Image 1: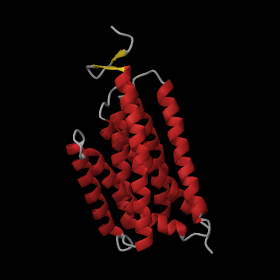
Image 2: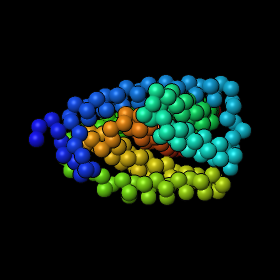
Image 3: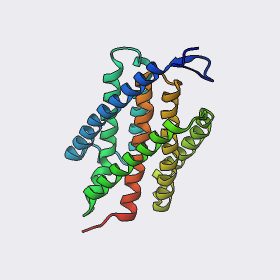
Length: 229
């Protein structure tokens, strides 16, 4: 067997060249996807369009839009429409994030908190990317446990939308950071091992990891370090 081909537990072998190509395309598309996110957040803050999306209404719009886009991405990932649909999704996610961004900007040190959250998220990504490149063991078994953890946290977050507990929000934020940091490692390792060969699907998975870590970090920093005038 050629040394450039790695046998996998997934039932097929993927060449090193193909794995590197998927990883390279994923990183480029992930970087590109952050631009519509920033634009969406800016539009949301500037227009206040998401300010009315509170409580249950905001939850319905967010979940409906997010799952609708993810379904569309899955359907178009092998076509020319895949990238535009993914970028539309990231714009929508930025729009949904704008309400929290607006609240954080209401603090005297809001800009610093946002930069800290961005730096923290970048740091987590760097650590997980490094770990994924040096860990040799198969991490595919993590998937089901991470999925269960993500579902439990999502249920807790939905409940807390109606309860409005600050302590609950802090606990959920810490759990989200832990789970989606681990998901970052898992998703990067899948790409490196050849378990994910579609760069649009790979980008979607990593984008959701990055988005959730950033949002949770920002919420935690706002609760613990927000300075009012």
